[in-house]
Length: 248
Figure 1 (spheres, helix red, strand yellow):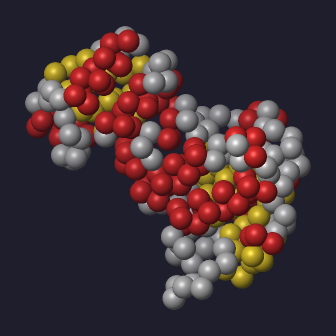
Figure 2 (cartoon, rainbow, N blue to C red):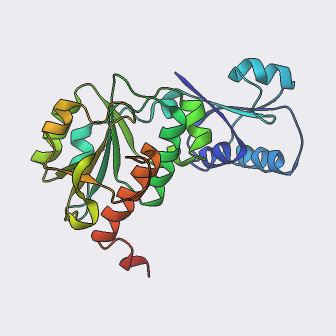
């Protein structure tokens, strides 16, 4: 198993983990690359000098700006975690879980992870089927946030939602027919469920929700981009949980 990362910031954030295995490939010399070089040397990551063409072949495109990090071994599979074990350790008073149904665009997923990192989401849950798999684009779009947000892939999403309920989570699905989110109580253990932009929440997932919520708006379109919606909903959940008062 391996994970290929490009983009200076994404690579920099991954190297900060300090416990990864892999190789840093470099084809240029500038201040940002020299910084990556120093970070890699600090944690003992092998460094290889290659041509720009070699890096094109390695990552399958030319948008690497002369730096590619290939992560191998256990670090590349860091998302293979148990839902039960993670949920057991989440905060009792204001745990926050984000459940994504049918998010297949890596750019949307990367943007969602950036918001999840900013609002310290405890866990992101995704189904095995109809979910994004492009880890390299996700890493670049998330600006390295994918290295910090706990994310698991589950075989049965409905069963996972039921498990969250058993653990004391209230489940809220995002839907334009729902109640305004600012008029919905989101304190305590909260799980937000977002579907794809095209088809919305799957029927079986919606059936597991305790309530449906929407973002009040008055534009010409009936919904937000899913990554924008995720950011707004996560902010509102954390606001109601008192997350920001502790940081004032």
